[in-house]
Length: 469
Image (cartoon, rainbow, N blue to C red; front, side, top):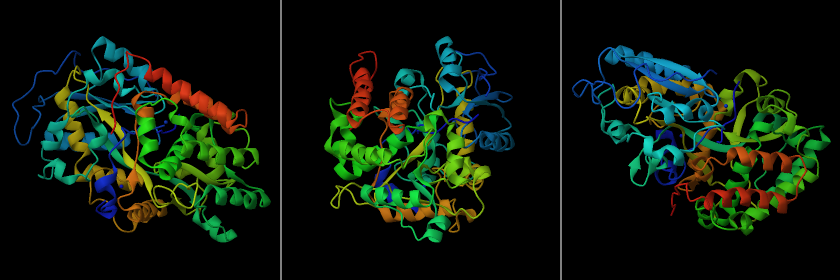
């Protein structure tokens, strides 16, 4: 079963040059991970390094990879493993895992984690709790890819910043994610609707939807915090870096910032009007998403750009999935309506005590090859951090084409954040948001609930904090 994500091109141009500076984006989607095929506690015997073997992977070794089985599935890593096998003669065992923390935390404690981990999903391991157990990945960037080009030269500018903590590059975020309000262009054209640019316009559209027997929004219980992501993005656009930094740095009363409160109040007005489809707190999230993409019960859905691939089997024919920027509150926001939340996501880590550290890095090298990156983008309809892959027609995807327009329109106004994933807050926040979206709490109660979760982390001296500026 999938869990929700929490959770990009030469064709993204300057949008990425200044924008992708913040999160180790988590993802919101089984079997238990196996350990490395070799004993834990450090790298196995290795070969001499060379241009063709930059990490010194031992001949005949096997790479153990634990991959989050979410909206992207896991076979793209199998594909990269086959590329690696062809290039360097080393294979991999790829385990699909839903609950990363439950499956792998005991292995980190025991000192025998897998060689490569896709630390994603609602139950990802908080990076702050294992950062001292991660291998640095700078040598991956310095290595040549299988086409003979230095890997760092093949990536979009800024995509390594989310995974760089205290000057150490520890997390490679593989997927370039655009967060947006997604809708059916064909449905909107059919009804003469316009995508709302402000929350007031969203409220008005909710009335038009209701007149047609539809809702404005729908949600599922495991993805209730998608609306938190939407709210934060809108608040940052309204209030600027002051809002983003307050949240990132776990400041006292950060959820009481005027811009945040304005967005919460606007959302509450829509909830109270009955424009959210009831029952989301008891609905599995992909079932809720199908109510939007297949049944067209709701007009809008906030998500990252994985949504097309995640719902491709449950999307109505002719749906023309398209993304739009998050709405703003006022006519004079700190950032323009076109500003976008976008970042490198799907965080991959190589545990320093893995049995085959060199193998974990080699599999990352394979994933960053043109062959593997093209396969991912073509089959998932989402770009990786490797530039020059996506054609102008987006492999026939309206969603992928719309991502191009969104980021071109945003220009340098691209932003993101990381505190939710960095400190592992999502599980607690899901409870608060499911209650709020169900109409069971006020804006004040939502604010207090989120602030209590934030303060608990801020006041816990055992949690290493990352200062964001």
